[in-house]
Image (cartoon, rainbow, N blue to C red; front, side, top):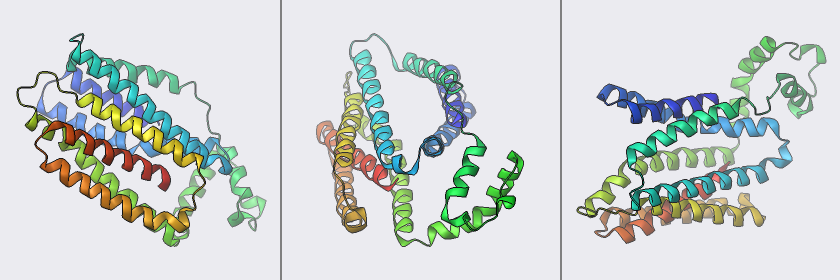
Length: 274
């Protein structure tokens, strides 16, 4: 989690206070590290909570993240429309906010390795293991985890359902990252001469719709073992259609609609796969 925050600080610092090509390349690299470290935050949550709380807190955490982004996008768009700020100033604001978030991290509850050892005792895989073979120190715990990586990998990915959802997660995340790289460029092509683009409202729209969809999904109990594959096929097909229309549209408003629908479906399915 610290890596994610530090990466965000470095990324925003390069955007706000540097101008060389190399520094921007480093910043984009750190931006990629930030996206990759997103899982660390959920790993932290799962380490604090009990297993029966995972589903509920995953949904609420993802919904909370989307709600926060909605507010940020709306606030930023209003600042641009009213000419109270510019993009450079907003990057500086993001830098200072990320720096403040780093301070908050120091006050979050820590996950003790002894707590994780106690959970090892409670799992079926270790019930037959003698107490004397369990880690007695942090170094032994790290060594134990490293030794078990291979067996855990085989155990987890021997499950066809996990392989299916993991593959879907990887492919859709790659596609979402690709879309995030070119969607502003496509908006710019059809907005030549427009001094007041509403792109921030489009981002706020998809995050708001994501919150609604995630909360609805959390409200209803759905058997994803039964309906998961159908959901993958239907949503993937719809998402592909949205991207085709998005790439060919010559007006910003249908592009906004397709972008909102695509990103909202992506956030919904990522939440389900977690």
